[in-house]
Length: 280
Image 1 (cartoon, rainbow, N blue to C red):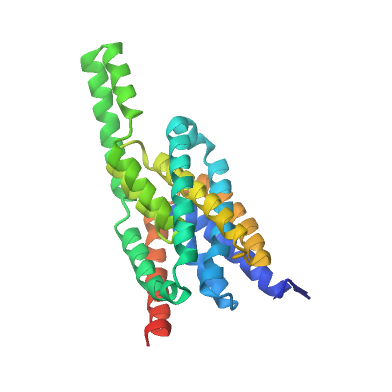
Image 2 (cartoon, rainbow, N blue to C red):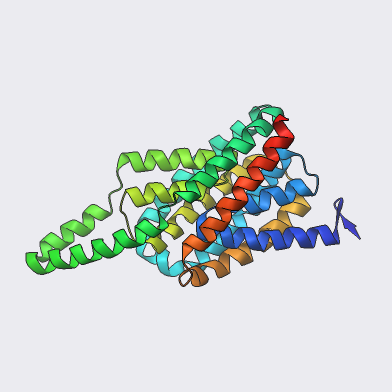
């Protein structure tokens, strides 16, 4: 049986790819390194595959945000701000993808994937956990020594103010997310970690919010321009929603480095494979 030019078996495989993309996407921010190759493998052209993938991985963001309600409850104001920034950047990235020649996109994909793999390799996840523990100890000591409610309130207020460089950086990450997106989540994590705005699990949830905003607006641009393979995008979205939803409670107990190393290896293999096909 064939639906929209895609067989039932192929749609099931896309759904399974979506499950993996949703889980890995929330854990280390690289859902596109799983889902995008799956769409290419069934013969969807690169630009259409990328646009359909952007729509499909919205499921990762929505599922991930629902599953990470515990983490996001402590970052409500920041989550709203970063969702808006992500949404604005996503539009710009989508127009870049549609306006640039398709061949140019094919040539830029392997370097982008290598860049994504490098970002995962230097992912701040492990360092963030250590920094978080140290910061918590410092904060507790500061509160005991100061003994002043006013001082503590002032420190909490300072945490709410994001530096300008962070918002600009997030905007550029959102543009990249709307254009291609593989590794955008780890780029966002690196920025959030550098700004020292919270523990690892909260940062992980926030980078999902940024990507969700960018993917939603970029997808709207792609839809209006007729750049979506609907059967593939829908199956991918369903799978990635489930994968993203179950990821937060699981990743709270699994060291991120194991998944990160596996994704780095997959990214390198994929980049080399696509590079050979494109450049040789």
